[in-house]
Length: 131
Image (tube, rainbow, N blue to C red; front, top):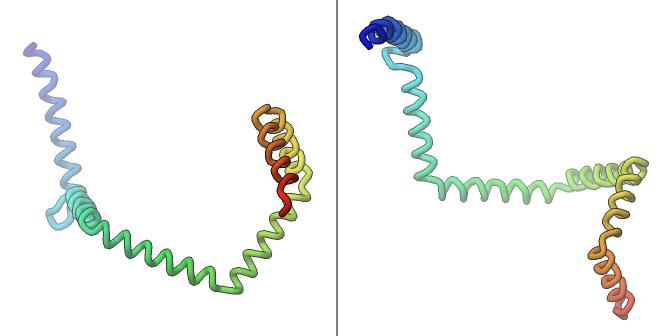
């Protein structure tokens, strides 16, 4: 038991020397950098927790205003419309997309529940005089 303690003492001494050297290496004006970072993170976390309601409202308001301004921009609307049409045309003309879509619909219509819903839907559409 005493030989184990004697063997552990040099290891413990080496570890303490390494920790001391590490602490001396990462200091700024006598303050350990990790302590400063830790205190900063805890301070910021506490402030965010305490002021979460006003922060959330401010972020929501800014996001809403940005979305509203974006939606009112006619140039952007035209560009989005053009890109959407281009993407749709590309997808509709892509043979791989058509193949995957057809396979999906075939598998979907093979299920009895889906067939029942489709028949019910078309029966209601045909029976409705407004359609």
